[in-house]
Length: 258
Image (tube, rainbow, N blue to C red; front, side, top):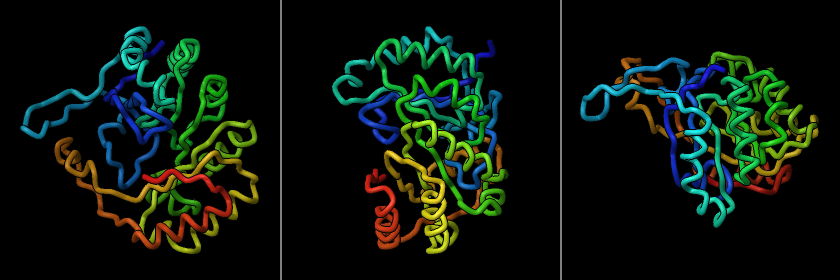
């Protein structure tokens, strides 16, 4: 079994699912979002990054499943008190070794620890099918309803993203739809209405919708990885975000605000 690389274990996370969570960040992603705030997550290989004080640091290490579960269980009391658990993120967790992941999530589930998966949707649906019995919630990213924009800004069509979202919904998975909001790109009236129309026409069942306004966090990492700094985007105004929330409210009344 190939052991995936993990580049961060973040304790006391409160934005990656219900309650207090431990978020495990797996290294490697099949897409390249132009605004990615974790560029160290993109490659499936180890990398060297310069720390803020100029020292070299290796990004990515392996954990056996036993090691990782022991680390996770250190905070069991917080999961129990808050209704939290573990979130597997990335990079893209669903592009990792599925034997490792299935064993991990099955072990966590058997020990009474809630599992959430954060995914961009660009992975074979059979991967989702393997994990579904052990996953309580999918944090599912939908970046663009228009495939041309998705290809331009992530390097990949959104065909598989939409197909997997439909299949997960039809299979009865709990889904928190996460929409990154980029001014003038996907927050305009046409894009919002097209997204709502697609969700309605495909009878997508959502537990909640999560608006994620664009932010600039992580831009300083690019030069420290000896990469070109990505272009700047902008978040919609507060008033526009309120309007978008109201528009989606007719489809799914449960919102989680960043």
